[in-house]
Length: 156
Image 1 (tube, rainbow, N blue to C red):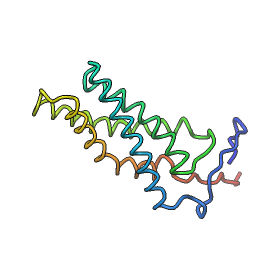
Image 2 (cartoon, one colour):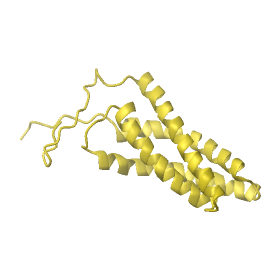
Image 3 (cartoon, rainbow, N blue to C red):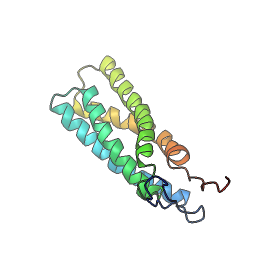
Image 4 (cartoon, rainbow, N blue to C red):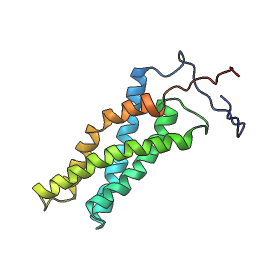
């Protein structure tokens, strides 16, 4: 597919050549594992450095979301080129909001239930909330963000 404005070609695999669902799930899980390690590592480091759990969570999740979107875009869903890249990352921010809400709510509940919890417990709570939002993230990426694009119409 060629972007009329820039002349840049983006390859969109035909439906038969698209990555099979089982491979997508495996790849998504691998990217998710790396993203989770990145998110939790940044969270723990920033929280331990005194940034506060909510701010540490937000900053760490932004970095992990950008990484996750870029890698899933290319590797899991087979989207190459720059066409719709900004749109894809913008849509991923909606998914970011869902994950951020889930992790922030989990931290807020922990703060009420066990206000003296250390970094390790807070990190575990963020991990559980992140895992629970993963299914929503996969479905959103597959059906909304990286759905196969339609071929441009030749009708005048």
